[in-house]
Length: 465
Image (cartoon, rainbow, N blue to C red; front, side, top):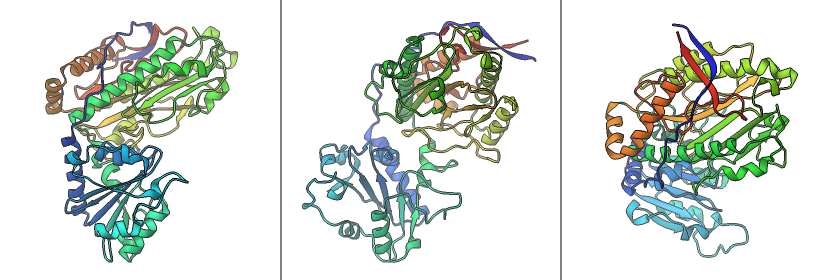
């Protein structure tokens, strides 16, 4: 069967969305903490210190629903079931439901901003010692990543030195304090790699928010508009951002992570935009044009070839996904689909997504990781042109679900399930992208990529003959 990619007129349906974010019951959070404590016992860890600050709070929020504002925080956990949350001055009024979560809370004012009172809390060493951390205690320290490169994999900690120093001093041996972030983030069996139905429902709501924001921006994109005038369309609806809002035109689009500025869109120039909220990120990139005739001479012939092949690669990624597939096989499938003379991949072709935008990635050449039910995955393939500068992107997320999980979602969240089925049908019937039954698209612009942003009704499709 021959597959060709072309540009065709396609109407984007309104898939709908929830009116509000589905709740995450305290029982789900309690079950997570119990699983962590089971992991501690398996690893012979007697205590765990989970550190968080404003940017690096996903592991703590996963356990408690709490993310520190302005300040830092630490959750102490023991293998026998004790849990203590340390917070600064201002977070005392921003606590989760501590009774439902079985949390003891203690004020530690060094977490507070400079100049605030510090006379009402115990020293950190006394707090940790009273919790049971002492000579010979084996402690896991959790920040926001672990290390498997040139750094010592267990001894390299990513928590502040004042916390690492006290833990090492109390345990009386540096080797007894180990990096335990892998409990949460290991790409094979990390706890945050597999999601409960309740979490999937929140992620689907988040994907509706992020994709609606990007679509609204694209519908207001025009020649001469300023980046900062478009930012207002990237509406998070009160969800926390997982990264800053991105809008860039022209040469500035080379700095893909840049925030909006007063820069203006020019006909034929590049653009990129992204909105990331907890649980979802949507990105689109391309050119401010109606057709190739609007492009400058240096990209007029090159960009259409790059963009069409990029869509082939994206479709290949989607069509190879399934529960049980090996991530390394998907890596090689998309590598084969890429026209190497046109562009390289900036990073891995896809990754896990959670409350933070990037948890880890199973997609590597030598990966033997089998993709499992409940995994939330991001189609994050970023092409880096080998010719004249141009960009293209169609980043969205999916969840993998086996038959029992699909049945649970259909029963517990029937409206969500109808939206998922409609998105699958759109990708199959309108775009020609065929998904395995286990692939559940969450975005409301799934696989939708208009190569020319001033003609949103014409998008890439795959035809089979």
